[in-house]
Length: 210
Picture 1 (cartoon, rainbow, N blue to C red):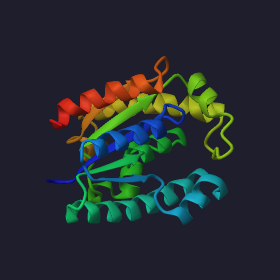
Picture 2 (tube, helix red, strand yellow):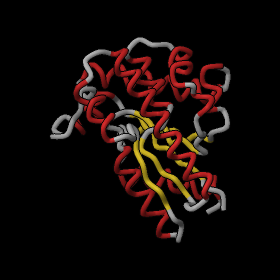
Picture 3 (tube, rainbow, N blue to C red):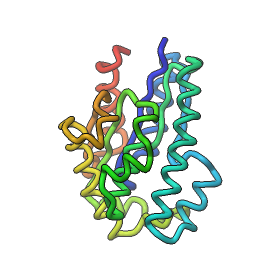
Picture 4 (tube, rainbow, N blue to C red):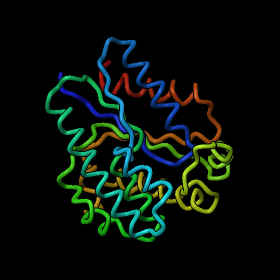
């Protein structure tokens, strides 16, 4: 069986972590071997990126470096075929979203990351919610990073919605890397975590013939 990559991407506070938890359990319960990962990927870069970097340009460079490391790692897993599924929290698209929030164009982010050289996920689950709800879900998290404040979450919501529309349209040259992905869009504003999982898992069953 070819290894298939499901990426849960989107807004902080939209429920990505819980959905990834549930999807991994769901796939494993069906007898599949699942590899789980998250972006940022490299533990040393993650610490610097999420808490110590002080400017947007440095953030973009660190994200790009992490994407290269993650891409090499995930490609190796895909090529070995050891796992049936890879499930990641976030993916390369998140660099476009956060880059846009910080004022960088899709084309600039694409060139910086050399996205054309990176492996492609098979399915992206785009998670979004109203910013005020998303922030309320994470505002008391003791492990919150520097990006998790109301103004940033508000801009991130807008850019997350925009990214989904752009990816689905298949007409932005900077996003051509994602043209082969199948997409699931989930606005979780008024949904419980169980409802999100049931909706996404039922779609995956049909899309993947599980």
